[in-house]
Image (tube, rainbow, N blue to C red; front, top):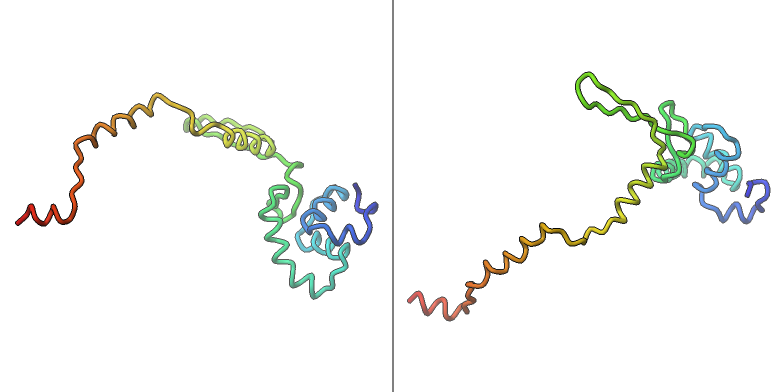
Length: 150
């Protein structure tokens, strides 16, 4: 859905980060934070004073939202439009460069989270041995302890 197809009520009901995403998608260009938020404010109908008051909160939103990325030159864009270059230094002289898509990294992280962390391993046999160590344990009341010392 495009911004021009939305009613004013629908636009006002949307979050600022969703509006920013639609703006960056439709304009297909990178924008400075104040320029992007000014576009959002114009859509929602916020005043210049509200723009100044809410700009820091908007920066926090974009910084924590995984859909956005701040580029080296201070411009913001959608993360899906960019890949990162990772340099792996195996030895002192060997360097391997790879272009990695950020979406692939997120998928790998999700796959790791889905692994069963409670799977039975052979290493867990050590836990059964700990029970044998406690078989000679004796529990004594405070009364028995003090009377035995006298």
